[in-house]
Image (cartoon, rainbow, N blue to C red; front, side):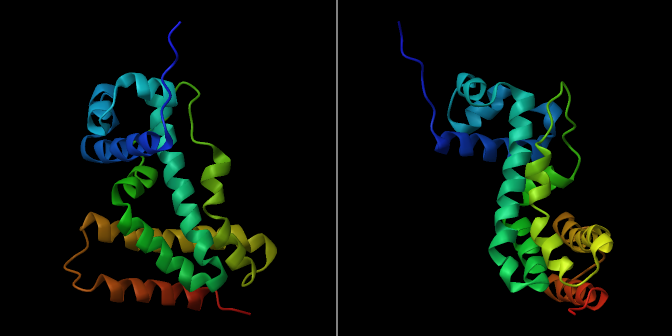
Length: 187
């Protein structure tokens, strides 16, 4: 009996990266597992063995993105709200395809295959904890969504390149983070 092929974490990560890039360029409907496997230098057998199929691979890409984003937020959490805002932008600029995939709605899940809610919500926990030091209990989650919407909006406009002739995105982003701090001052 032949021994089953095993695939390593490096191949798994490569498949996740290739998939994010392809979905960003073409949309999820226009890519095939064959295209993804070829782009990653492997076979479709590897995709099936590691993920189960296309839907599961797409969900894994989103979960991978949220996990990476969450780690970047957790790393700067001790430095406070301002640091979280700047880390948000830096992560998005370093991972633009993944960022657009996570937040762009290009992937809708079907067949009971959805990103793990714990993974996606964990990414927001550093922001929630930072705001818990600034606002009262029941106002923390609405405050977190408000902050997320502000920084997300600025980053999304920058990455999309649709804002009217902005020459200095650094200055725009500093103004956004300053506005967040004024809205939710330290106690």
